[in-house]
Structure formats: C-alpha cells, structure tokens
Image 1: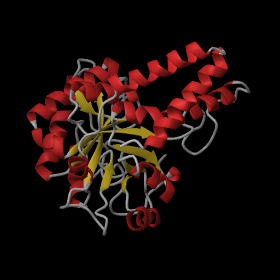
Image 2: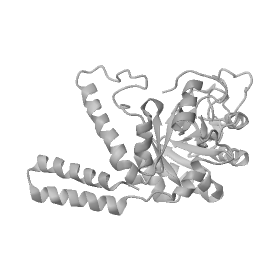
Image 3: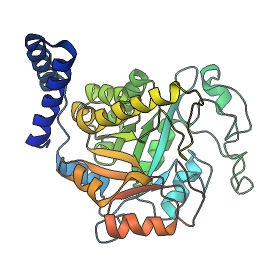
Image 4: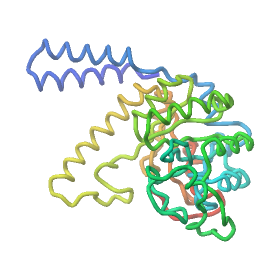
Length: 334
C-alpha cells in the first residue's frame, strides 16, 4: 500500500508546481484535484500479496534463508544460446528458479523469443524482425554466434508458446520481458494465460515501458506485473558513458532522466499497480529495498554476474536477482 505520507507529498508537489507555473489559485486547485481524480479512477490495484509471493518466491526452487529466486537472464545467455529452449533447459538443470524471456514478434505477427529488433547478433541470419516472417525465422540457427555454438548447433528460434510450454513442464517461473508492441503483447499474453492458467501463479510481465504494463493490466488485471528501470538511461549508456556529445542534448536528457526517475518511484508504479520493480544492480541498497518494501513492492536486481555480487544480494539484501550464468562468473551486463 502507498504510504499516506507519499500521497501528501505527491499532491503537494503537484500543487506547488502548478501554482508557481500559473500564479492562479483557481487553476492550481483545479489541476491538483483533476490529477487526484485521475489517479483514483484510472490506477490499478496491486495483485494480492499472497499470490505475488507465490510467483516471486516459489518454495521449491528458492535459495538461502530468505528463499531468494535466481532468474536466468534471457534464459541464461552465458550458459546456452539466449532465448532458446536449450537455454531454458540448461537454466533448469543448473538450479534456476525461473527464466527471463524477451518477447518480440515476426513480421506476420507470431510471438517469438528475441531480444534485438534484428537477428544479426544471435543467429546466422541478417535482417529486421519487421521484415521477416516466421517461416524464415524458424530456419535460423540461434546458436550460430554463441560461445558454445558447437554444443548447441542447430538450436532454433522458439515461439512464445513453445517456450512457455517448456517452462511449465520444468516448473520454472517466467519473467516475460516485453520490449514494446503493447497491444499485440497484451493480446498474445492474455491468450497464453487462458491456455495455461498456471501462469497466474508462476509468471510476471515486465517492461521498461509503463504503457506496456498498463495495457497488460487493462487486458487482464489478475496478471502480476513489474516495471523495469535503470536510472540515467536516457542520458547515459549502461557503463555510465554519455549517450550524446551535444552540449545541449546531454543536459536536456539528464533533466528528462530526473523526471522519469521521479515518475517511476512516485506515480507510474502506483498507476500500473505493479507488484515488483526490476532495477539495475548498481542502484540497489538496503535503504532502497526498504523504500519499496514499505510500499508493498518487491525489488529484483539485474544483471548480477559475479559470485561476490550474488552472495551480497542473496545473503545480505535477500532480494531476487537476474543473472547471465548459473554456473560461473561472467562479464558484467548493463
């Protein structure tokens, strides 16, 4: 539940900003009241806490005293070709609680697993998903660019349906990472939840785009959802390097980052009724975990790739984390 103090601060900030901008008490009261009514009418309630715990902390596969869930990023892209059935099986064999899978679409609307908008980085093909039909994608070797390509040679790009069936069979929690296409993704996932009701207690829909999560809640309010966030993502790359050399664009995007970060932590999570917050690992601390705990929201850290980091999140913070490898240290992933 959102704390009363947060409510007061939120609407007070709106009131002050509008007052300073308009110099009109009438407009200030009207805009603040309208914002309050908007939040009351259009926000979604969080999914019941008991079911959220069942999704995020399944008793059979949790590790450590706090039953921390270890989630294989893209199925565990270091241990097997990312976003493939082989990766899902390897993750299960290596002890993962769940898998994070990227949802994309072929040119003819087939939901598939793919992180990028092109197939160049991970397969032996080349081209944009917007221009490739499923009949073409199904012929690609999804292991062609992987470090263990010989072991997994011939692994195919799977459909979303195939991946879900494998996760259900292996009793893995699924973190659906939706890149975009809010309407198409919500429709595809809604059908999956109808076909596999077990997903209500064993999956969570995540996205960097609040619109995706809001559309998912509109489509099916019973689905557990999470916002994904990395502070300074508009102005800086994951390693901290500025995105833009321009003297005016970088400061402007920095201001946009500040506004976006504030919105995530004070408005967007509440509007969407999210149950978890997936945050880049460098921004997780005991105080940060406590901030969200007070609001009934779980923290999940990404991407945690060294044993030292894993021990920190597992034993000290006791929060779920997403990793590229279940078996060894690997390169940092931002």
